[in-house]
Image 1 (spheres, one colour):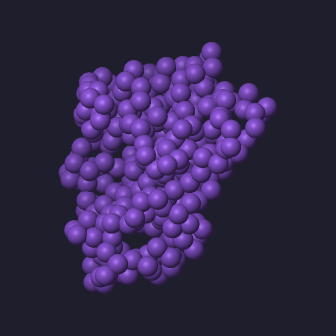
Image 2 (cartoon, rainbow, N blue to C red):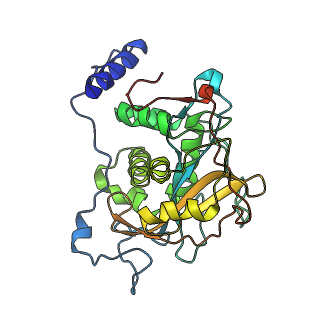
Length: 312
């Protein structure tokens, strides 16, 4: 039934757009990198190697401390335009390549800068990041025929106060360009323009699936509430009991309102396909340990049910 609904949704969206192309192309191009040579290279977890990584397409280097990050937002600011949050789910923030010592790089390849509002606009070394004014990165996804990916991203990768597509361009430009396994060279001689961008988005979605924050908390009796808060330790332990490590929990309002989570990992293999090993956060929580933390409910007008394949 879900497959039929999804098929109907894709068909309707394409017909509504007036496309004259074949409704469902038989050949959707692959976007994965060429990792043939990785099979003959020594493999280990990122940041745990004792010798230098010779082929950085095989392991994220130097950004081997990989953070899968999520938001808990209660509104988008663009509800009237239909930009809503997914019911009973946190949303994707990104996939960040911190260096092994906890430092990080950003905007590492300005030839792949698709962020319309760079933040920061000037790097610590004085480099200015030009604002991107070209087509949105959603057009790259469409060029590869990945309607499924675009639908998922519009359901779970939600911006606040600006269109979703701007957020996606920001995350790729600031973070993926500093992740060695997404370097253009890793895709070999058959590389297609923007293949790396679509591959990154696929990878972010896969990583997000590894950490179902809402479900892990709910299964531990922790649900959004405007009537009662939760001790920081209880929130942390609920997640650690399932991931094996202490994630970073971020709070606003002087540390009293839960807003984000970061899961720290080392990766065995590429960031695209490798195994994630959970690690304790290297960043102290910004949530108070002296008072209960609010995990606020959302209003019904700010979220929608997306698990059925049709957005209500």
